[in-house]
Length: 369
Length: 248
Image (cartoon, rainbow over all chains, first blue to last red):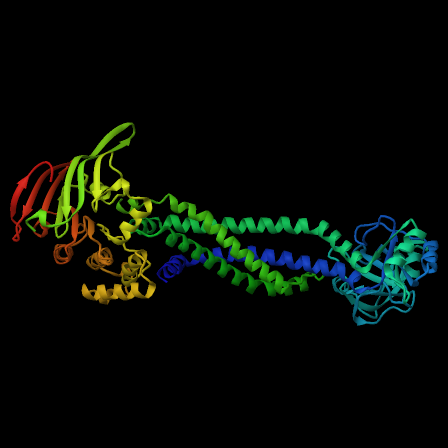
């Protein structure tokens, strides 16, 4: 208890330094929480479309593995062949294209998904406002996209010269750098002037085995890839991770390094300033573990205070980001918060260990100088 | 305190020399010092500043190895103690009193005393209880909750003495304990150390240049430029009873 008291009092003796340090550490932690929450937002935004649009088999062009970073073009004859394959119940075409919506800012790009409103396959995962499309001159916009550019249900917009009525606002369709919009397959095909599709969402007829139908499709159509739903979701997640996680990890690693450096520096300065105290304690026969524990306690106290500051700042910050920049979806989760808290604890221990090296160079003899 | 043969020898130095090297030149701080210190006595090392008193104390404490000669502490050669054993020795059997007190400023008097008890392995609650008991014994219980910066010099040194004797140390090494104090406060501190040595059969070695405290010493050793040149035994009234030079 005495060492705990010493830890707290020595930290409190420089209140301004303590506040600045804790805030600095706290902001580092906020950065990490924010990065992880952004990753969640991107992952959910990018994956929800695939996740929620359940189908037995996804049929794409040969060698295409996902819809995020692959080219897949299937022609009407592919569609006909898929539909005629034994065991196939339905095959709904979906065309994904990048389209520019004309506006006063020189245009905004959306990931336009053309789907068959009759089956609903390939449509928005959830509608927050309005309704699903029913005709070729209607469009559904992603909520963050609509907020950013001020579009509302009941309004209209122009895509490559065609005026479309906004009939709905979707959620789970913000893929960070781009947002989904939904039109009929016919409208999407008319925009590219080809009756093509990116993939066919294929359901297997009752009584047929999915894997057998997939094998039959592959044999009948050597120029396509067929995935069951779970594999296709995994493919997309992997693609997202490959493209996005290194960026997240790089910045998070820098954040961790900064955290370790600040904390180690702070503890080292504290040790040097209390050098005489440590020399006296060593003279009086303090066991090594006492002094080490003291440093660990100080480190964990600072880390805990910084985490508290970070948590206080983080959630209002998420709200602020949602208001200022609606296209950035930040989705904090309890698991991530727990992971960051554990990581901060590890950083605290690591920083304490680094700073402890300073103790070795403090000699009991210094108490006599 | 007149017969060394009845008492236990805690410290024995045999031809101890300590040299320091700086800027290529060699400085001898202690010249072939031989001395013994026993339980039940307050041994005064008198000498001016720079005479080697502190070097001698730190050598006795095992904090600084001698360049040559032998130091025996509690009957065992100092080099035979491992680092851990020396640390245990300092936490249990050795006590230190410094000129500038060296209390931990961020701990109260009670906590400063309890700290050394914790170092010696006492559990938290017992350490505090014992520290409180000791402060009461020394009649400084009113300082228990005070932080050192709010104490007078004399109060600080009394707490420092309490800290030094808290674990029942057999050997107290006091480096200029009265130098920062007024006469009356200095006498009070020396009286405390004297009583500790006499009543508890402990050994107290005081290094000082303060001639006024001679009357409290059982023996006086004079140190000049690292040479132990004089030895005197003191009567109860403070008068010198016996004087010698060389090995003491």
